Image (cartoon, rainbow, N blue to C red):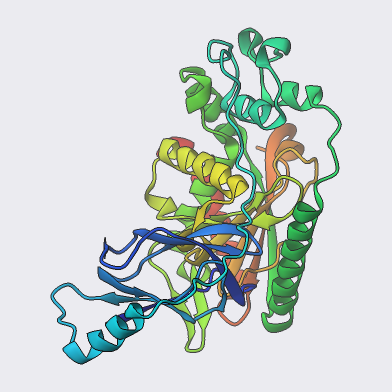
Length: 393
């Protein structure tokens, strides 16, 4: 009989509140099945089973807050026979009427609504359509500035009304999340000897290749530069092992799979970095689809426990925020994080001549217990190599 326990969903998690059971006694479960939903400082997380068998007993009550490692249910292995002496006490207890435990009100993050009916025929990017749905804007009332008059995200953002003050419950949740992030990052800086290496990379080839590739695709299938950077980072991490893995009680354990954590800013504040599994093995199209999916679910508060606990390396990009570079803080138990400034025209020397070229500055923050500046430089150089051959990503 195996115990299904409250998992750790990050270095900042001490406890979680059970808000939903998705199984009942007698149900068969496999590894990876979603069995419960737990609320943490970072939203409602779907908890997966790491055991295979039959649910024997649910130990945790809805609304109950449990520390990490606390038993939540018992799972009987397939073929395992339960002794008669184990069953009797449970039957006797069940025979006596017991008042159900009071259920705490469920707190669920708002789910991003879809676009309004009747707007499917309007040319708009997926991001613009989703954002319009969130804001309750009618796409038919907007003027597009994209190709052939298509509505892009900037058009929606420009048309949004002034943002109302979040309700007190939402403010409390965001404050709790910010406190959890602050505690985890403070611990990381205290316990991990960080070192930093930066490198500015010419994106001309990657940008030209991406523009040509996207020209033949519909807007919803186009790949963003963030996915190109993510794939290059994942491939480089598969080659330079000491940046990819976890540091625990027994020291550093390198990971063969690259489960790339992608930092996502949540609406109204807060940050999560769920993992995209085997990012180095995904095609760019599949990686872009995975990034869209995990971003939507993160902002809807419906991430999976494996996504919150299995990242082996994190990537955080500033997008179009207009900042050249930033240095990140490592997310324990990982040993490295890569951050990217805004890609922008930059003065570079190419073949002895000064040119204005699209470039990005990447900064690696890494754990000095595992690697050093020379290896960090090797890692950033490997990323650059992959970005100079974008057709091979």
